[in-house]
Length: 200
Image 1 (cartoon, rainbow, N blue to C red):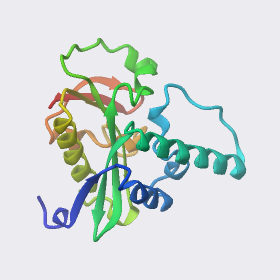
Image 2 (image 1 turned 30 degrees about the horizontal axis):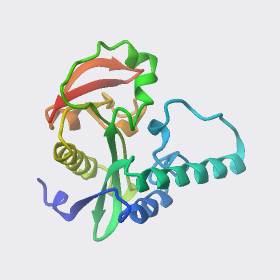
Image 3 (image 1 turned 180 degrees about the vertical axis):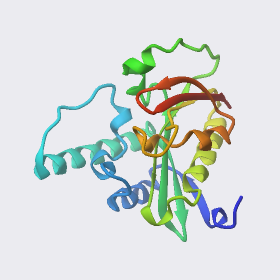
């Protein structure tokens, strides 16, 4: 662990840390993140699309409210990364039922199902404050997410990282980051991503 990494600590998304999550997303940590509020993968199918500032504001308000409701029901999971008390990073994880969107994509449906006695998990999204990028924040979040999954009973964990920067859907993280945590590539996924898996 580098000295820079030592300044970060993590907390699980709960009702107690929900306001920290909201503070982080209010800073617009990545393009589209403020409007999404990390709800994209929590829906089985997309909402109707629209255009213009008014539509984006309505979508953001709806997503924010639905995220609040899911957290209250303990149906939305993630890791917040902090620096000096301020939230600077985020990683979303959850069960297959909590994050159904991936499973409905054509690229994922082609994968042969892998049986596992324990429930399957997904790690879908990362966001990092612009001042803290390329400093190990996402890796800190990933390590903490795997530990929380282990604490919740473990099982097969699936992720969808990019093979190189500039590829499609960078918010899924990088292959190198997941390889360091013992993940292996099992299939291509979309234009520049892959499916990686490991068991915890």
